[in-house]
Image (cartoon, rainbow, N blue to C red):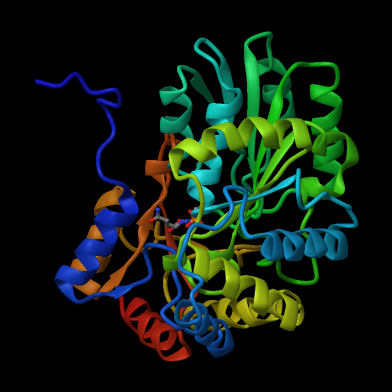
Length: 382
Ligand code: PMP
Ligand code: GLN
């Protein structure tokens, strides 16, 4: 028998719930992906580049034209001038970027602080690097950082802190003042920041995304990760990037070049073309997704679910205490899928120690209007 390096890891909840949705024919509001396509011009560009011979390896660091577009966006949106040659790396998905950043700095015996509920890929990556995650619960009901607890948890073995804003699964945002507090806590310490900002453009109600890229002091120790999959409605393209100061980027690339070497060439060409021609796409995203959130929430107001509207991401949490309080959230998500034809994601799976009595499920509202209407109708009938 092989001795597993990750004995307690099973199949991810996203795969499990999407499979159950497919088997039962339920509307799939579980795993986060749109049920509509990315822009025509973007998809057409892929075909063009495939047909015009852009089919061999892209440079290890990513296509220069795409790295330039990323650097341009970072300057426009966050006021930071980054060097596309030494600070930007294109990766096959944000997941790979996260993995490489963790492998680049975490050593055996190191500790990495993550905030629960946390995205499922951080902890296994830390363990494979020989480190251990310290899971700090975000304070309910707002999923806010408990600053005292964070301060108490930082010690000589802390090598990394993982931030995720806008936050999956809660939709919560951190603010600029949070970044200042964090900077004060880590000042003078030998530790790094991994800032998972894959939902950077999905911030609602006129709020601004508090990117670590805006924060001079924190950026100097940060890997900032984003995903074209989320931004351009093409999660299946698995293309993302990391922005980090040159010395950190150099270490990250040492790993990246042996994990995948590079990303898919024609996709990078298409993204570079589209970013150049359509800088307005990212400006329009907040309103686009806010309208979907509002449609879904307005319709859900007629249900027995309780919720506060997500501040960011394309996920809406809903409390089902008034419906089936006796069910834990994993059972509830299954029941919703099987009995009511709407698949959702339970939240407890993102915790090391789920809070007592948590009765929340996550719905993805990156869906066409008709899907959201049908799902809401089913949920209102419960
Ligand atoms: N981080 C978070 C918080 C996510 O929700 C996702 C979504 N899949 C990822 C990382 C991974 O992004 P990608 O699909 O580009 O690997
Ligand atoms: N990030 C997506 C979500 O939260 C899922 C990505 C995956 O399936 N690995 O639903």
